[in-house]
Length: 254
Image (cartoon, rainbow, N blue to C red; front, side, top):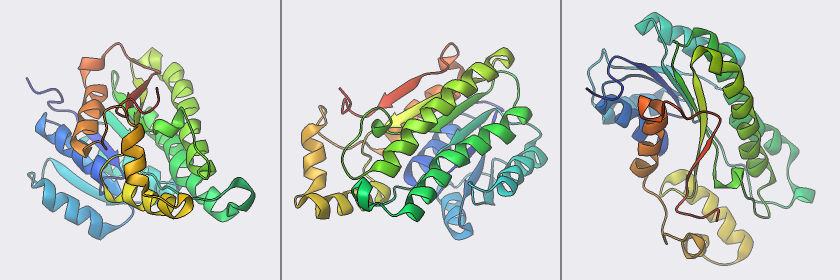
């Protein structure tokens, strides 16, 4: 039997590489998926790439940091399929590379809104509607357990969602709902390339080569590799795992 047969999954940040790869993994294992992202055209492109039957995939354009929009995608999922089993809060932005003393306050606030407030809202409005035994996965990062100069907003946000996850895990456990964090290292995608472009300018050397040199496995991850860890957390294969940070960083944090 497929790992997610008959289960309903929400993926935020679904138009990005990890969201899309995770949605594909969920669909392959029998799930039905609500794709959530900011822009409708990105969602439509994601739906076309997934090439799944219309009764297996739906889309909802939403600003995930907005409470009404969050209630909107939760309500739309319930209206479409009548249940929610998996909630993957994955949407995120990186901010800029800048010292704390020069960091733009509006950028800091924006990063916290998308990376932290959105996951809080997903839990606040998603948990009451989730089926018993469901799973919430929140995307953090290797810099949720480490950090580097110039990334105060991003690192702060990724540390913060770990605290949110641990609180939610204890509150949701009586209903058998598990809550975990996936903490990827650098992934070979456009989001990471944007970060590394800024980092390269800040340090005056090729940030991609630098990161590969300090990742013990010697390379960036492929989105599909991290998505397999997300699938593990979404499925009953991780049935006794909650309140945990699952690293998918090629050993970068050690």
